Length: 79
Image (cartoon, rainbow, N blue to C red; front, side, top):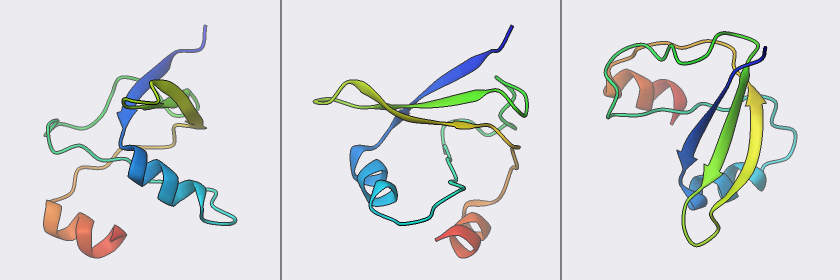
């Protein structure tokens, strides 16, 4: 059985990513969860749920891995 995770996603961030050509990888972070993300395993589905007023699944990806970074390093590396 394939598991999946539905994550609330900021609409502005989603729109920005959707406007970029040729993206094959995205990063998803949360300051609210200090531990390594372990809800699903590599190869399982990660769904991006758009917040109100859209309230819909905007897209999905195949989960690759989780890393825990200090916010300063994450910002420097990922922008």
